[in-house]
Image 1 (cartoon, helix red, strand yellow):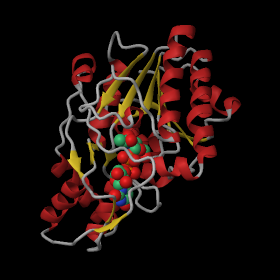
Image 2: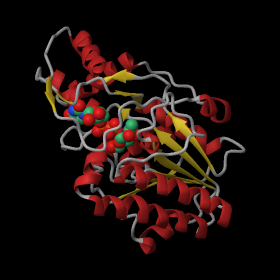
Image 3: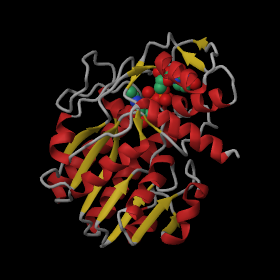
Length: 313
Ligand code: UD1
C-alpha cells in the first residue's frame, strides 16, 4: 500500500478518516493540518502510527513535497460553518478556495493517483425540492456554500484539463465523537449533546422545523474510503448522506428520550444564510460507490453521548 494524505486530518472528520485508513491497513498516512480548528488531541492514540505535518494548505511550497507521489489525497482541510463565512468571509475564502486550489495543484504536479474532496450539501442551498439529487442546479446561499462549490468545480476541472482523478463527496451535516462544541460556529448536534449532558436548554434558531440529513461520522468515513477505491467515478460529484431528514425539534426530542429528561429549548431568531431543509438522494452513491449508511440518528446520538461522557470522565 502506498502513501495516503489527509488534509485537515486533525479535525473532527479528518481524524475519524485517519483512524478508518489505519483500520483498513494503511501504513503510510500523512496528516497535513495547521491546527487552526483541528487539534492534535484528536489523533492522540494513533499519533505514533502517522506522519503528522503542521502545514497550511495555502502554502504551496510547504505542502507540495508532502503530497507528492501519494496514492490518494483526502482533502478535508477547510474552515467550516455557514455563519462564520458570513461574519468573517476572508479566511474561509482563502482556505476553502485558494487552499483547495493549492492542494489540487500540488496533487497534479506530484503525480497523485486520486483526490477525494470533501464537498458540502450546502451547495444545494435554498431549492425546495427534496431529496437533493446531484443533477440539480446548485443554489448556494452563503459564502461557505460558494467556496465549497468552487472547490468542486476546481476538482472537476483538474480532471478535465490536467487528468488528475478527483471525486467530490457532498457531506451532509456530519456529527459524532470529537466534534467540538466550544465555538459559536459549532455544528448543532455537538451543541445539543453538550446541552443535554449538562442538563441545560439548547438554543434553536428559528422555529426548529428546519431539517437536515444528519450523518454519523463513521458513515461518512466509509463513503470517503469507498470513493477512493471506486472505478469509473473520476471527475464526479456524489452525495454522502444517509437519505433521512430530521427537524431540530426531533433531534432534541430524541436526545430527551435517550436521556430520560425533558428540557424545553430556548428559541432565538433564524440564522442568516440558513437552509430550510436538506436531505440526500443517495441513489448514485449507492450504485457507483457502494455507499451503505449503517447508523440511525438514535444510534449515532447514543454513541456520541457515550464518547462525550467518556471524555469528561
Ligand atoms: C452546513 C451544511 C453542512 C456543512 C456545514 C459546515 C447545509 C444544509 N449544511 O450546515 O453540509 O457541513 O454547514 O459547517 O447547508 N442551529 C440551532 N442552534 C444552534 C446551532 C445551530 O438551531 O445552537 C441551527 C442552524 O440555524 C441550522 C441547523 O441548526 O438551521 C444546523 O446548523 P449547523 O449545525 O451549523 O449546520 P448547517 O449550517 O446546516
